Length: 84
Image: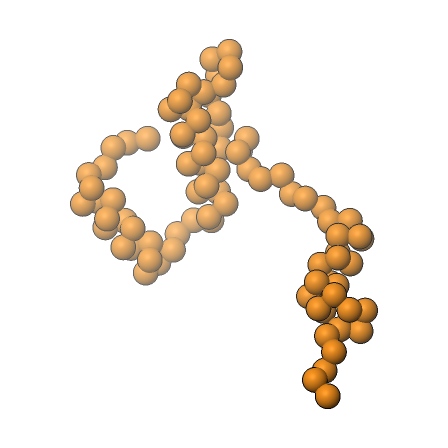
């Protein structure tokens, strides 16, 4: 990773606010690998690759989906009660 000045970093940050570039999950993975490599890398001497820092997708079970749906509906089988 090359070094950049504070001024250049601020320019890049300002540009990113106007025109976001890249995919945030990939940027986060690259940043995580850089940080981990800065602090010693892997046990045994290897370097982390950004692909190893990717989040592991979680597959929801039917019970989890039902729980989320129930919370969204106010916890009631027929949804929240109307104020009568």
